[in-house]
Length: 93
Ligand SMILES: [Zn+2]
Image 1 (tube, protein in one colour):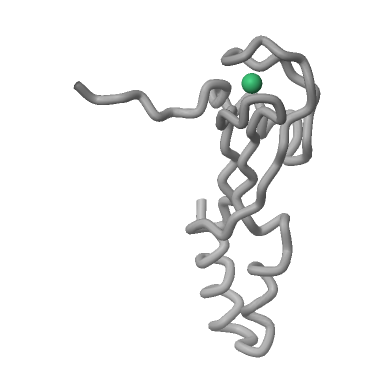
Image 2: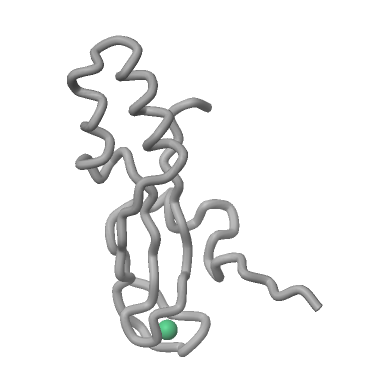
């Protein structure tokens, strides 16, 4: 049996449409109200951004890796730690 590992609140990009920053939410897992914990991670968009920059100006291609705007934002519950949603950074489409 396959487990559904999709984040709980990712439908229609709910979290990403509002903000890539921490938002106030009721956790569907533990029913606690609180703000989401946001972690930024380099994703495919980060690499893509790096690649584009590399073509033009190779000296600054590391910027996406230190710029949160160019990284995936993962929202998780502060109370139970469950992953609520992920907002991938997209640069190539
Ligand atoms: Zn929770």
